[in-house]
Length: 253
Image (cartoon, rainbow, N blue to C red; front, side, top):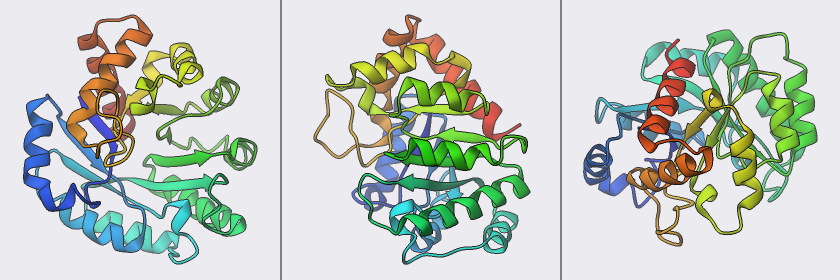
């Protein structure tokens, strides 16, 4: 199993990292991708990836953080060249649900991350909430550029998913698919091709049932894998193999 999106630099994970890694390995996790959300976050991610062989990282600014964090393509490329365990760009994107940051600045930052992902030829980890039309409009500008897209914690509509498949996007399922009120999302993941699906925790957020309401951690991905296998009507072992292969195809090819 691979947790394709976690935040090991966030508490309570950061101060308990050795135990978090131990519990991850115990449930069969082979890789952890810890995600940058700000410049300060990235500085921690750079240290964390050296903590254990299973940990990799990304570089990027979360849409909530763009008012106070600005990076350019050169900054991203310099840090990618300095650390081979930084394998993705993000998380970046658009969040029009909370509107914690100026929308124009979100778009500007998103486009910078896209340019860097194209230049480096590595995956772009995208956060999208209540912004489907604008998200598609921006990605459509790059439709002929072979952008490697990962829609993290995908909760969008099936219609949006169908549009994104035209860009050969990947979609990551989080613990949300285990929630009782996620019937529509479960239908979307039933529709999505298996070869385009990854799994994640987004820990310490969004703990899956039966741990909903608790602080999430990578080892809880086992519950998400169980539910996704049920949705896709395949053996859990097969689901784990396919999602692991998908991650490796996206990030290491």
